Length: 268
Image (cartoon, rainbow, N blue to C red):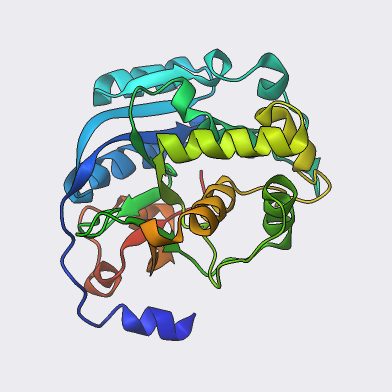
């Protein structure tokens, strides 16, 4: 990983303009302090025309008010997910992972509630620092790759897709470009393999005895990479984890500006 960070200091190609997209940001109330930073960074640095921004998450008057003020669409998760999944039980290591699982299911469900062909999903605690496009000049989708590897993610992905080759790097980069045709094909593949609705198959595939039982980005990224290798390109994410104060600083210090993303997982 250290040598990858060192490469952040080398010149990189200027991002080209990609196709129009909508943006999806899953949100819980605890993430409200980072949402304005995330949205502002997308508007400043996402090299795609943004047709609409959709915030989806727990039903909350506070979230609704913030979204109204920010001029973005807000959809409560209980209008999207079946009731059984809104209240899904997932406790591992003494931590309630239900909300963490739901936000992944929301991302995988986006074709049902967003009228768009392409959607950039971004975790609300992530900030884009540099102009970035999720497509290359020749039209291939960019799959950002990270260093994180969790055996639980890989096991769930293989249960749902079937065994196959794996990328050398992780697709768990806190952001991804989703394509409607690919996502619906993924859902159909999962349902056909399991013989059940795709959401039920995903819940059954999650090992709820561990905290890292599923990754939506690993699932979609691996499917996209395996099934359409000529239509994608992988690029390292150049992400740094920072505290909340640094994430919200209007002008970050110079060394950090060499990275593509900042992320903050510690919430007040």
